[in-house]
Length: 240
Image 1 (tube, rainbow, N blue to C red):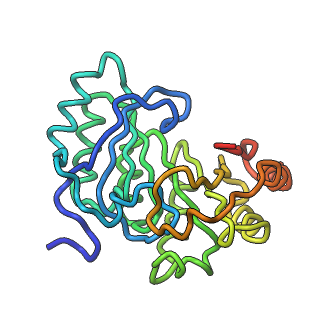
Image 2 (image 1 turned 30 degrees about the vertical axis):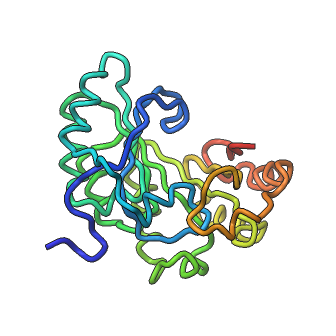
């Protein structure tokens, strides 16, 4: 029987055949899983969170066949969501990708540290990316019962991943100067941290967020500058 919140079997709600942004520095195919264990109102993929499910879901076998047909063109795969670690078939699928020689990046919100730990133990990804939504004290606002599993995933990634990044979408009302600096301080010394601009350009899970005005780009740059030297690489500011 599937664990609470788990979504069997492994299916994909869709894909982007060619992405220039989902696997930094590489051309990639991006695969999107259905379902999420958080309810971030500003999420730009609401159909992946609450449904309805994709009319033509892509099985793991079909997804593998697709990327194999295009392997001469694209050798990098990003698996994202929704939340991929909810899927019981994630690890077998990643194993298949690795056996066929693909380079793999996995995006996660960090709610399943056990799955992330096993992925890293088996060496199934080249890169991990984890979203740090806000400070741990405010994770209840996103529908999380507690923040401990998310914090455990941070430590697992920092200690076990060969390449990784943490990133925060700077959402006014949820993330400001105090939160940014607290998040940054909690992961000080990590390899890479990125601030991502909040955008109202697409449909959101909760329409109320469409009326929220993003911070000016210079403010994100100032916060990034305030954390200069905190990480192994300079803080990146994206989508400004």
